[in-house]
Length: 295
Image (cartoon, rainbow, N blue to C red):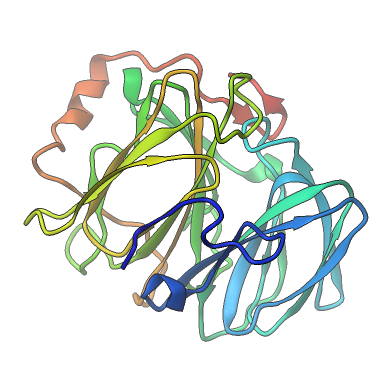
C-alpha cells in the first residue's frame, strides 16, 4: 500500500481529495475535500458513511433531513476555528457556498443512522499540548468526550507553528490493549506560505511512520494538500519547517464497539513527555480560537 499520497493524486475533477476506505486498503475511514465556486450548490450522498462537514476556507449552508445549518467558516485553516456539522449515513446533503468554498468531509463507515447536528465554533475546545519546540494546538471538534454524536467517526485539527514538532512522542493504535484501540488514521496536510496564513505548495514539513521491527519506516516530505495513510505502526513526529506553519486534519475510525482515540507511545521515547513539565510552552500557541487568529 502506498501511504504517502501527494496533492493531486487523489483528486477527481475539481475536488482535491476523494478517498474511500477501499482506496486506502482498509475498511472504515475516508475523506473527501470538495471545492465550490461562490453561489454554487452541490449534492453529496453519504451512503453507508457518517461524516463531518468542515469548512477549510469559505462558508456554506448545509441542508439535510429538512434541517439547515449555516456554517460561518473561515478564510483559511490558519485563521479561525470553524463551525461544522455532523451528517448521517443514508443522507442527501446539499451544500451551498456563500463564497468560494473548500470543505472537508472526514467520514467513517457505520451501521446506524443518527440525526444531523450542528457544531458551533464557540463550543470547540482548543488545547495546547507539549512544550518548547514540541508545542502545538489541538482543535478537538470531533473527538470522544467532546463530541459524542457519532458512531465510528473521530476527527480533530492540529496547527504546528513553523519550526515545531507535533504528533510526538511517536504513538500507535493498531491493536486492542490496555492503552490503545485499533484505528485507521488519515493525515490531511495544509502548509502555509510566507504570510503564515495562506496555504502554499512552496513550504513543506516532514512526517514519519514506522514499526518496531523496521519493516515499515517511512520518512517523507509533505506539502500543502498531501495525504498520509496510517494503517498501523508508530507515527510521529510531524515537523513544520522553519517559515512554514503546518496544519493537519486527523480522521480516525475502527472496529471497536465504542469510539476511542486511545494510543500507546513508543516506549523508547515516552520519557520525553515528562521533560515538558519544567519547559515553557511556545507563546505562539494557541494560534486560533473561534474568535479568530491570536497567535
